[in-house]
Image 1 (cartoon, rainbow, N blue to C red):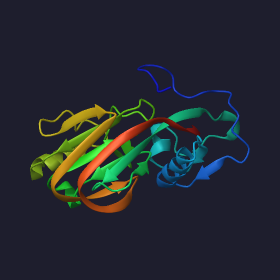
Image 2: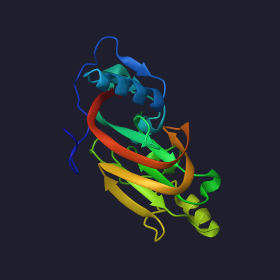
Image 3: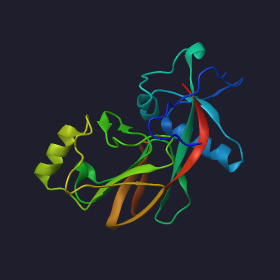
Length: 202
């Protein structure tokens, strides 16, 4: 069951299964969770340092005796009408220096040191989407300075939606990355959340 507002997240006293799978990155965690979901299973895993662990306030995983078990949603993206691709932290679609139209879909609030999705939560069944037709150079600079604290929002030229599914078409193709890995340039993107997709021990 996805989390409700203000409810505690993470189960104490749940032993990790024997042979717990370890994903070395957010992108690998997404791939493993997708494979398990396709096979009708629910992945139980741990993950190395990245944006998912940062969301939990952890630079690294806790010692095994102190771990909590978290239920986590899996994000999916169809790029240019192609086959669905998974992500656990974020989809980012933008040109260098964020010139022109852009969009981010956040399952986790963080992308590195940038707090791109201040209201995003990895287990609420929603994606935190921010998009724009483009910012003037000065506005891009001001927004960039505020990204570490999430105070780039609200902004009159940034539209924010919290959605289970979202579809967007850019005027022309824009480079897209999922969990920091590039997936080419695309004009059309569709994203959605798969609630309670896998267990994360951290």
